[in-house]
Length: 411
Image 1 (tube, one colour):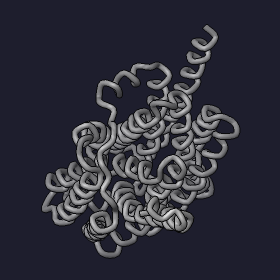
Image 2 (tube, helix red, strand yellow):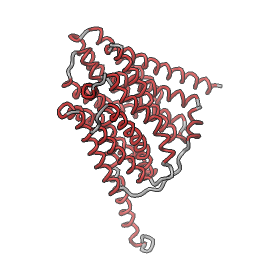
Image 3 (cartoon, rainbow, N blue to C red):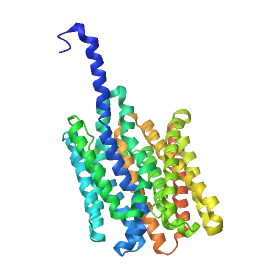
């Protein structure tokens, strides 16, 4: 139509630009989906004591709900990406979000622990299918000129989930029971699904790297070393985060009513850390920021250890600032890790970032399992020591990987 009327070409271009803006606006439905996934994935840590009591299981067993979800996500995400590679992209997003809505509904209606565990496995597969597909869809829709803006539109949902969704979910769980939180997230997911079906344009499938290509990249020592750092970093985080309510009660005598404000502070610090680390990595180099983040995270864990040693009466002045430092440094480190992986293999960035996502959830599973073993031994206050062990290992992995990379570069 535009070519047939050259005189109206400028106006047509303006309409095309407006259509492009409208197309990015439609990504808000993917943002909502990411918000629902992030809220469900992180809020369960605050619900574990109530879950354990209601389902008549121990706190370590309740913590395995986090372990199972994370492990299923880590393994399932790359497998689902390959299995759905040939499908139209909007269909993949709709199926994944529909599965996520169903999983939340099943979790809310679960009669016992086994049913809730099965629902969380479905949630993990659905989330692991949705998030990579949403990022790929947004990047393709935005095009080279607006790719960063499109991707940030989707990831904003996860950031908002950490800041607002998790504390709100904990408050809803405390006021109306843990099942109400799953009903609420199911409603958010259903709303996202309707928007995806009604507002998102169809998008054909694109080129998708196979498992062989992913494994070949993982064999590179610099890439595998960076992924090990991600695993260890997140393992330390989830050792404490999964059982944060029990840890605060044991170390500082804080009751359930303090959890939501603490999680709000943690989420805000995490968001600030993510933003600062991105610009800092551009200015001073991603690896330096990863080292700094690992060091500050380890310092926060040592502050947890000190808090436990001081006793409840004197713990809070150290514990609460340490939680803020923990959120700032640990999430900032993860953001810098992404920049580091892109710099190591720019042409294969989509593959390395998807592998990093699996590494993050593998670390989450490892940390939740380590925390469960610690609590099962009756040593809630020792969670800081376990997290510090992971933090020290993460810091050493960065140093060792950097040294070997420098040696190969000189060679």
